[in-house]
Length: 133
Image (cartoon, rainbow, N blue to C red):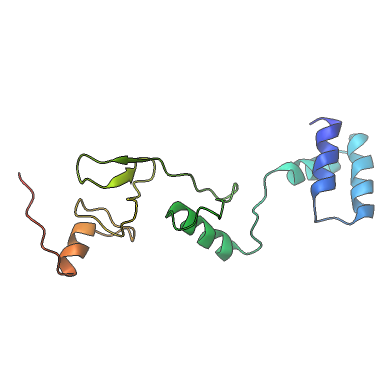
């Protein structure tokens, strides 16, 4: 880690007072091992959510495509869906996570809940033709 990267990591944190930042910078520049560990920890990506439940909810909304304005947390994951038309069920499917755009369940068996989408649709009263063997 360069001196400039250390300086930026220390300056950008909200976890330390100005006095603590100055002390940490001096110790890091002289090579104090514990200070270097702290600076490296500060330079790692951090979760923008203060509450783990908020992060999980934001990640679910992002992954589900419900909200494009909430970025996935760089610490806890999430991704941008890359949808393509499935030849099997005709839905737009993200082949990375198997999300079916705009659907909660599909006759192919996929379900947002993790259950059997085909069975869920039948329980809801949908008429689904039997699969050809």
